[in-house]
Amino acid sequence: MIDYNQLQPSSKALNELFINCGMEEKAKTTNLVRAFNNSLFVNYAWDGSRPVGAIRCIGDGETVLYIEDIIVDKAYQGKKIGSNLLKSALNTFSHIPKIIFACDYNAKAINFVSKFGFVDEIKYGKKTLIFMTRANCSVLRKK
Image (cartoon, rainbow, N blue to C red; front, side):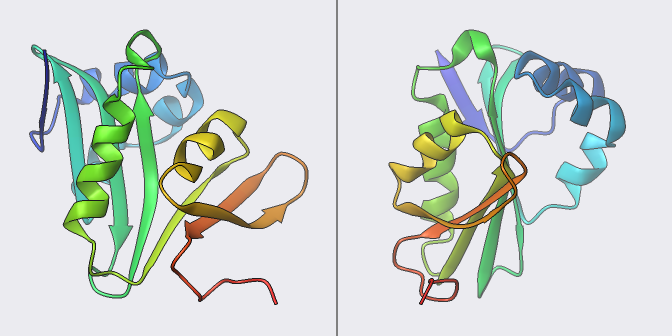
């Protein structure tokens, strides 16, 4: 059974989660614990004592929320863990008018967040950065 809470995993466990999600480079180059501790909102999915998913959001808590990381261990993907993590953030910050998801180009991630009302807004280059906003946001709409 998967449990969800905001308890911080050890640095080693968090790095292993990023590696198991295919994000080895971020695990090597970033102090993940400090990044997560300095975030507005974090939530983790746990299988026993092992973190198998995480979401991290940054923002001001009133006008803008950036979904910075949403990751699920490859062995646990397809089990609604990512959906549950994203819902936890969207429910917590339902009052915020501008919610943005930003990622390196990743068709799987873009397809995933599209199911929650995010729409493609800005693309830089072929495979660099994608910004998506919730469909009810008007701040970044293309004219």
